Length: 613
Image 1 (spheres, rainbow, N blue to C red):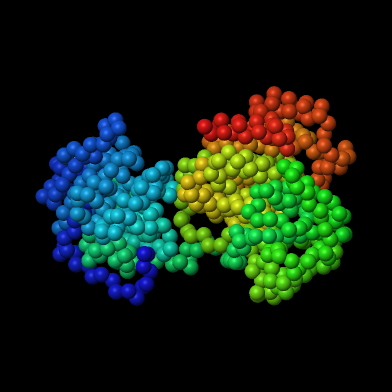
Image 2: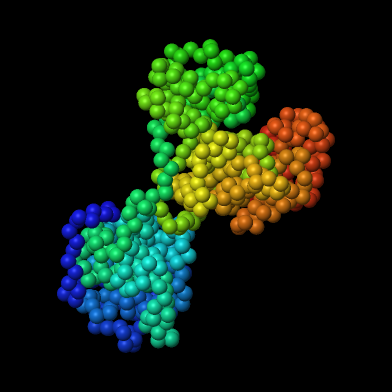
């Protein structure tokens, strides 16, 4: 729809010759204002909500001044006719029901060429209905020009593809200045700097913002020959003093493998490491079957038996030399291989890709693989990645869907396992679940998205883009109509100390900011200092409007008193677990549940549901 062909013939502008019918939905107008030509007003009504009923009343007296200002910008020497719909009375607060009614009223009762909406809704609960009526107006060739919210958020209807979305920019210093944007929800920037405009009380005001910029765009379109939205877009492109091209406007990580994670029927795993542990333990959540689990003899894993979380199945870890490549499995899931390469002195990525190419097997990699794949052009491969992210100029969506976050005080404490336990419970109870994971195996479980920034991370974005990408993902998931979104983070949330930069938690804080959860479950270690747990809770709750509703105690500790490195491998005694739970609940005033204890996990799930009910 958004035409950016600079060679297209631009509509000729003959100001004052072509009469347009313009409809303004705003706060009405001041009929006594000397800058308003009453003769050009064809229709003026007020749409007002009275209890559960919406009424249409004749007349549109402005009590604020905003609608008068917008009309004065448009009426500066033109020969157009106007219909005025008043939906604001004492406050410029957009009622979603009233706006929907007003747009339907325009469609049913008013023939107009341009509809000016110097307004917007950020928390839009009826987005589909709003988009539908805008699309109906678009289809009948009404050009809708709408302002983005001055807070910088994504707002509607400006963000819809059938609407010309307008924002203001400092580059636009005069009334007719425009900056056209290719491939963005913001179609055009216009003159929204401080300017003296007729008002109500006082008679003039110095105002600024996207609502005035929107009026200037409507004014320019009213003087053009454009009679459809496509032609209006073309006119604005030609009239712009500056064009922000798609190439300049793209924020992209050009990793675009073929997607195979959603098309796996039967797979084998190699090697068996920490990340593979969850895939095996929760095989019942996989939308495909596991044919086998393999490793090398040098790791000491070959011959081990791994029982699933529900206790119903068991897998024997086999030597990779015993893989029968001509068997019916279709995909090889490759875990992180760097340490295996170091231990064995072999390039396992290359070795496994050689077999996959020979036997026509697909590959899902936990590690980034584009360099290795250059030599294996026929192998269909996938890995967690982010590709094209359009520029919204930092605008964030308001997420109306409930968001539950899982965070922790450290690494290797069962956060991902907890997310899978909760996933199973939500699905079993019939909830429609949306989920963002931070482990590379997340797509294998059917999660909606993955932001892998833990071990061997390759998803690199600066903080602002990372936050924007997370917000985009949440919005995409909520558009599916899910009941709740579950999102889990990596490692600790705040630094334990400041002795080395590697202990900082910048990405985790960005993740917390990006998902902005409503509620959080915090995973803690049995050896964590209670004051550190309290600091983590305070930080999470103070960063946004969020409640930490529970802690989950990881009961594994280190084998030796002084070996507080590596992976905790020894389960604490029942007495110490009970004492730590009592200490956390007393000091932090949060319920504490034992990780992996099935009865307590059921209690946690019940608590989560109660908190969101």
